[in-house]
Length: 335
Image 1 (cartoon, helix red, strand yellow):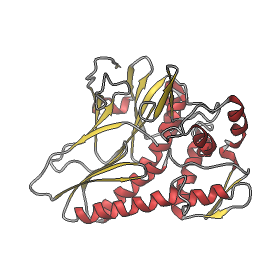
Image 2 (cartoon, rainbow, N blue to C red):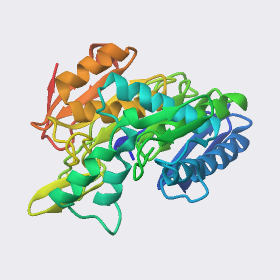
Image 3 (cartoon, one colour):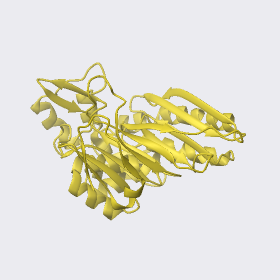
Image 4 (cartoon, rainbow, N blue to C red):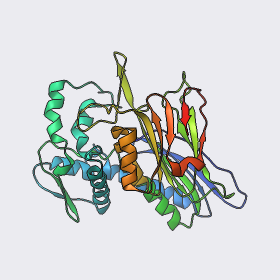
């Protein structure tokens, strides 16, 4: 469940039919804005597909692929939908590149912490000690159509990548329907198709990870994009506090605890929402310098980093399309 991309804006055009829709799936609000004669058909098809993916990929959906995979951990490999296999393969690619910083076998930890549910709590050291041996991306077996987990009790959780895949699929559906201008926001995972109808870029607001007072919609900057995905990972959306300590949902596979790097959030801008969704989790866990190195190795990804000491860094390729806009006056843009 990745977090915290802000508001997109668009201009109306008399030459384009505009369809706007807000729905709920994958545990989040999904907003679409689509321009074109087939806009309504495209919007409807996107939601039908996302609802299908929700049932297929959600951790606790008993009829889905991930539930079936986890139920057979340590027993046998299982035949999975080709889309599920594709997502798991991409997750494994990022896991290898990040040396396990992104690891979809964190399922046992996710369930134990329960962050974002009514059962959230801090697991005991003994509980984490028992769960950590189950977290190892190298224990996933994949062939062309089936996947298996090596040890009983292991659990895959695609919460850090599934919404990214859904965003890419939505873009494909728009294109299939002859749409040339659209955006979709899946709980902070934003995908844009083309530019706005007036030929200008879309604007994505990057949310303030430490908003002042009750102003949760504050932003710290804006990125201008066309035909790109904008995806954020941060510690400010799903968390709970106890004894003055913030416990957020991005868990470090090495420690079993919420990741403690020097970042409060990272926003990635790239062609593929699927890739960005996996990479931003890894970058957040690794921190600023190691995260930059990971992105250099991967290639084709720009980023906005917000550090714990409230400084904002932007990769070179994005600087011309980034506007510093700190409504709270808390942050410093390091150019």
